[in-house]
Image (cartoon, rainbow over all chains, first blue to last red; front, top):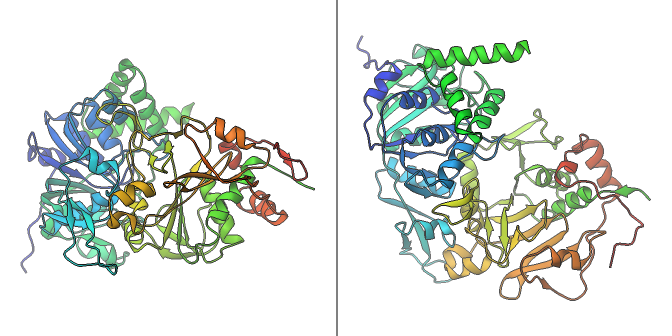
Length: 298
Length: 262
């Protein structure tokens, strides 16, 4: 029987397909289900001048701190239990990200929809009257061709398509062909990221047989179809230190250490980076395990 | 006569902001808005739809930050945006700055290109304020929060919404600003912030002194109503037995029979 092609690869093989100056969408939401193993792999590479499109968390913080971002498209950057992301704050306050596009978070979704539907824009109200349109004068408005009930022709925000070169997302389970399910409470917008991109790479906690995807999980959780996916990587704990419910919750202890280092001196950050970010993904996971063993021993 | 705290007055003032909303999604951001919304659901407006702040509509009215409850619906982030556009929603957000015309800033302090202090980003404020009813909660009322003009407009006040046209103003509805000192709306002359009531123990003068712009004040300003025995019981024993409310608004104990400063 014929089978669709298999797309299993390594995180380094994914990163080898990226290049300087690309527009990369990062799935998840704030500090939730972020493809952190891929973000860490980008940090180990020489990739630079990236345009990053993200409802941001530590993914944005780490890439900003490493100076990899030329342009950032975001609606917020937050660690949730720690509201302000210190590396992002520092980057903004030192103006080390040359170009920023701050959108309303609903505009962000509409922009991904437009890209996923191959439209130049989609209209919505969000943005009107706010400084989102003042700080991004290239975002235009459009007048409705239809009169409203008062006979007025409403002027609406023409949210531009957020077209991506590449989307990176992390889900709980995938098969070798790129079909993927989320098992937590929220799909976030990973299907939109994938469809807004020319190429999409899915990392997951576990690769299972296609039949295994729906053994104990309702079919409605099959968020991503293989037709939009170029590569699949199994990266256990690959969303660390963000949530990947129900496989694991956010590593709050580690996040605190991250945030303290990020808001501390350059030496503090160098020590954190040296301890956790200087090796490969296996070294990172080993360093995190050692950190927790130390914490437990205290 | 029982005593009540400033935080408890704030909770009922937040609750009262939701009492006439009918059957809509109440979206509180932060501890005090959540306490007030749940109090409203247990008292003045049992039809309110509430969530766990993540992805579930809750059938009951659990204490703050309790996880388990009957689930009555699914509200992942993408469906929040759907409800925003549908309009049956009242959000109470925070505000790092709010200005004379009821514009709100949660984006950054200073110049946008290189802010003195980067905050969260505009989040959903631009969309909320032109789609559904929006209120603000300010736990520390002072002239650094209540400013003449916000540095960056995240949430859109009625004057700017009107200037942007009917697409923006049609559903703009800035309902209440509740602070630790009083309650406000944006229905002063020329769509400006107006003082509706001062909390028990707070003088109009104190509010004026702590506000960085000229407040609209219509005649004698009433005192925010006091919590009832039932409300105090619900706040203390049901919704917030760990007194999380006092972390946002430190206790300023007042007896119900104490005369507020004039």
